[in-house]
Amino acid sequence: MEEPAAKSASRGRSARGYTPPVTPPSAASLAAVPFAHPVSADPVTAHPHVDLPIALIAAALAVAVVAMAMILPARTTPGEGRVAATMSWHGSLSWPQTISRVVAVVVLATGIAAGRIGADDELENLAPALVVGAGLPLLFLAALILGPVWRWVDPWDAAARMLVREDGEASPGHVWPAVGLALPLVWFLSVYPLPLDPRSVGTALALYTVLTLAGCVAFGRVRWLASAEPVGILLSWVGLAPRRRLSGWNPPRGAEALLGVAVGGVLFGAVRRTDAWSGFAVLPQATLYATGGLLLTCVAVAAFLLLAAHADRAPARGGGVANAVVPVVAGVVVAVGLARNRLFNSVQLLPGLAGDPLGRGWDLLGDPTDGLHADPLGAVGLLVLQLAVVAVVHLWGAVVVARRTRGMARLPAALALAGVAAASVTAVSLH
Image (cartoon, rainbow, N blue to C red; front, side):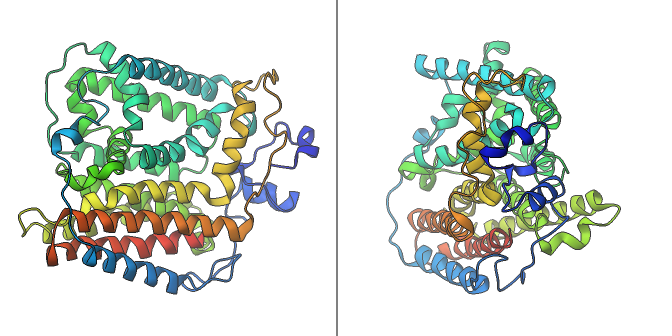
């Protein structure tokens, strides 16, 4: 992506990840081939552009997380009934929620159409910025701050309610199918070479929609959405973070595994786009190696959280490993989405792209690149913001642990959260 003065020359060219470079040559190469010129940094002690002691920061955050989880006093928590009512698939909808969901269905259909039949260029097509660049990070951020946002915008539940009129089944109490379906999703975002290619985004969104609706018809709307649809499940859980709802939530079976796959997959995607992975990126079977790395990372993080949850079972209530990690998922998605200014640039592109979603040259709301601020915070400001997001969500998780139980029963969840905090700081800093 180039400066607005040169936007006419940039038409029809691709800029992978909406990464505006300091100079046009590095922009083209780094955008089209993310590993062609990897940045160099010590994977333990230094950020590639900012002189920061990454290992010290990671250790300090881990210590702070454990200290906060163990020291803060426990408090009363809301009941499970209030928690269940925030899930997108629960009960009936109000008229405002119905209207907002109709809008969400239209947006979903527009994203699919733009990706499939719109312009091939990422900068001239609505789908990449709407779905990957801004959509996912902003949804997780909104749910983390505002609460059950997904209940207002879930387009798949809205469509399923029209296909499956009556569904009296309760949630099955586990999310194991969602664990399996989350793997191809994080593979697309973290391993697939062209996750911002409009055709790929449109195809992935259409396939996910068809699979979700087919599952609702075949197995029941509530059963499928509550146990097998990973995006909606995670966003519904994150919506519990405000108003202390997480402290009173009893996670379904497999929650730690789903959270581990989500966190591990997103963090692996961050590491894969750095110098730490560049040696594998140039090999002939680069995608195969990346797939193996993704699977190992997801399994390792999921197993780590499951082991911590198993150690947490001895007390009557436990410290809540899954409860503590839920806000971390949102923070990691936002922090990694900020990398290379992708989120900032996608948000700036959206108004112009909305006026020409198929890239036909309409420009009803102006050219998408007009007034674009390529690097609004600079390298230092961007890294500080990313680390701040990571720190806030992990300390938030520590507060959840402290509120949920008392004494040494908190220790397994606190240690699990500290381990994820150290890994998150390292992965985000390498990016």
